[in-house]
Length: 324
Image 1 (tube, one colour):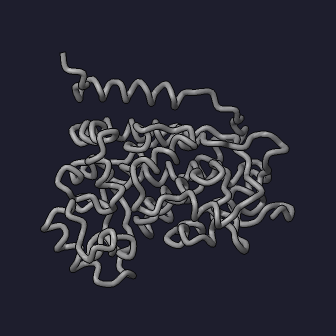
Image 2: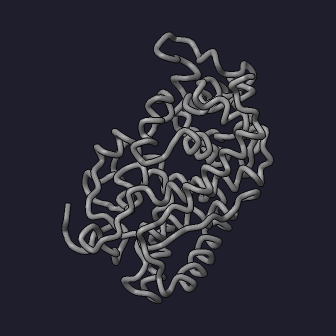
Image 3: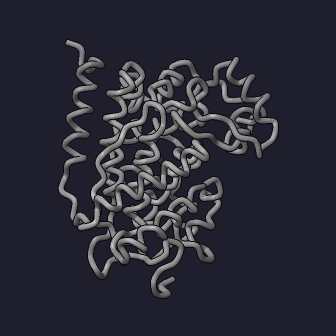
């Protein structure tokens, strides 16, 4: 009997694994004003989304960057010299003004009640749910905001798009996540864009050999070389349906059309290929359930809940007292 797991069975195992993991006990507490806050999140996010639909991917990325460094503690939002926000890895980030706008309104209605970490987590969910094909997931509340933020930590930990699968797995394992989470959350690249600067080495001088990465589909490579003559230009992460939250991202990997090296490696590394292939064959509405469960897990990474661990900031860009 073959030791390989058939794709339908592997999908069932993924669903069971994520359902159990996402339902794990969370140490935070719900707010008394949760419903008021939720309505405000949704209304404000819709205002920003209607003006700029690309903000959904930006808010999703902002949330991941936050959780990847020190956990989901809103440390990415602190704006001071040498903070994570000042790191090279944070230069592409957008959406800070959305969080500030929502925080300002919440403080008027529910002062000193809702943390910036909770706002960022909920807003990433709400913005993704507004994308065509997107789905909402469960967000639990009660996180505290961290006191500290360092650019060196962001530059050391946040993936740049050229890491090995081993490096990515080590990062995810340090966050309490696993290989399934890595592959499923990578599907966030079904929406959003990347700077051309992030892929120019890959399409012109891969590994310093003066040639493009041979794993890129030839027609797609030709398109990227025309599109990305300048590092300051931008290109869609999903080459086929960049404005829809679906499984085409994984289908693109089968066609050698992953934009970032880390995208395409999911389909060539034996530890991730089976999962990526299963997701490519999956109905998009089923995948979004998996994505939501993985995002729920992400939102619980190293959260601060004790009074001595963090605070509820009055403004998301600064701590209430000088800690750094």
